[in-house]
Image (tube, rainbow, N blue to C red; front, side):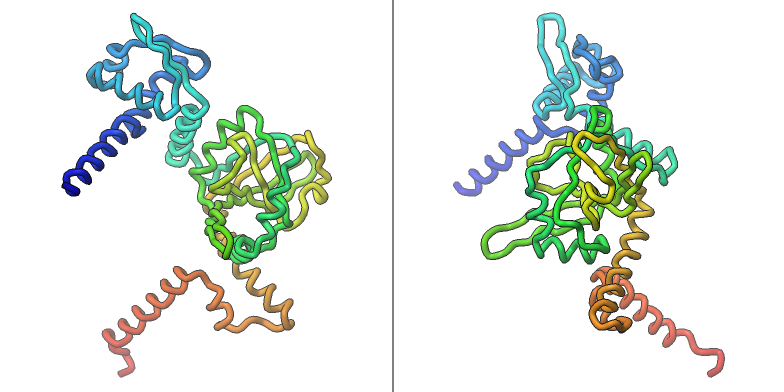
Length: 310
């Protein structure tokens, strides 16, 4: 009996997922209605017309629209001779993410993402969370610096709110979640960025995107080694540009920042250069595994291939 109940439960979940899941087919339908003008205003379409464009049956076209509506990608009003549909903000962000991925394929991979907005005051929560030891240790190791205990909050303009979908397609730096005796703290992702004003630039900064946050897509939180309000003389309402780095810059500078921080830490501690073993301890585990594997491979080759001097 329990086996039958489990099978029924899995079948029910599977059926629910099949009616709400948004995949490539649903995104194709979303792209069609956007091309027809649903991004700017509601448009009237029929399932038969949509089915012709998607090379599918009318029933299949109808189900795809239902899934998009259920997932919050479009608003739909069914009438007797068709239906009125329009893209939601969530649907527009999904299409922008697709657009960004095609940009990576066909355009220069060194291009950057630019977001513009205005400085605003936050609720002060960033000061508390940034200074927690479970996060601060990872910031030092993975970003290469200790952030000022607080975040710079930026309200994005409308165009940048839509462009923000491109951020998730960039290579970020993972900050793991952790827990203490009282509670758990969620993970976050940091994206290297520059903060640009008319005459000043903060070259070392990161957009931080917590997995759990009360901020919506219209707001950014930025961390940096110094208090950006002081170093850039910022006030609420002031406009600025946040320029995100390409993935190649992220990889090389993350590695360089980690080694630089290790060197600085030991020089400040006892004014001596760190030993190889000390650097090895602070090296990321995957890098260590790779180096050990290369060393073992070289030893095997030395045993298999005789030396010409022998």
